[in-house]
Image (cartoon, rainbow, N blue to C red; front, top):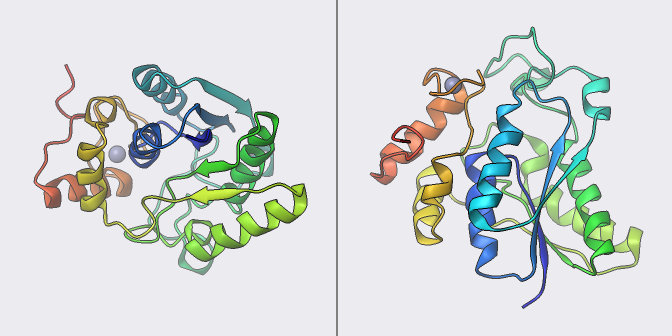
Length: 219
Ligand SMILES: [Zn+2]
């Protein structure tokens, strides 16, 4: 098997991707970024999940995203809204975030002679983030390949799945225990608030899949 680098955020989608990748790539490495997220819980979750998956985690600082400012997910003091950003995007949109993340991931992969990257980007059920689209990811893979003169493949196992299908995939790849430690809530609380757009999307996915959310039943 070939090695791979899986981007992880401590969230539901990246946790599912990590376990999906575990069955397909070896050695597998996880990569998370510290970019001044308003909730430290995200990085704590990523650490616990990678420990459960027995995948080594690298955390790299990317404070440039915080320094650029502008998103409700960075820093504190801004209310999270489902719209209110430019062109109707949620105000949680961080411009170009995945492009930056994948570029750094490709550079890290290069150090390890790894050619495969995994990201939990998803067009379906997403909030319309332009950097989650398949077209963006494909174009970026090509750019990275040209820019590094090095084969780069970007895998997006969740791209065309609904949230319910992602829950079923998580079951299939053995990610349910780890999902009990994942973090989704925009309010950054545990137990999750259940009211914010992220909590509602997650709850809808589990309900449609007919599967209880292990996060809500964590012991
Ligand atoms: Zn919430």
